[in-house]
Length: 105
Image (cartoon, rainbow, N blue to C red; front, side):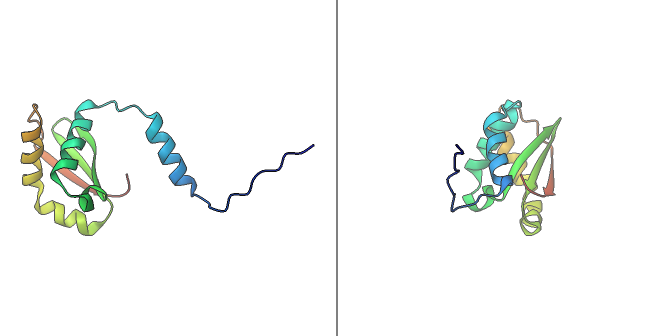
């Protein structure tokens, strides 16, 4: 006897499903980056944090991925302020450069 699958009236894109699963399974390996993300969320309002997030930290360079080129352009003018805010919020004071990349995170 065959089991019938229940029909789901709402479809979800596979990208959304996979990103949720990966985020829940992936352990944050870089605790300093997670500390920077918390500072980022407290410094900027929700409109910015929904569309731009720190995604990588290499030596003294912080990579911020931004969803739109317009916001990338705006954040370029704030790079010195962002560096100061993040360094003030951490004990490390190691960020000297910010690179902005347009893409998805």
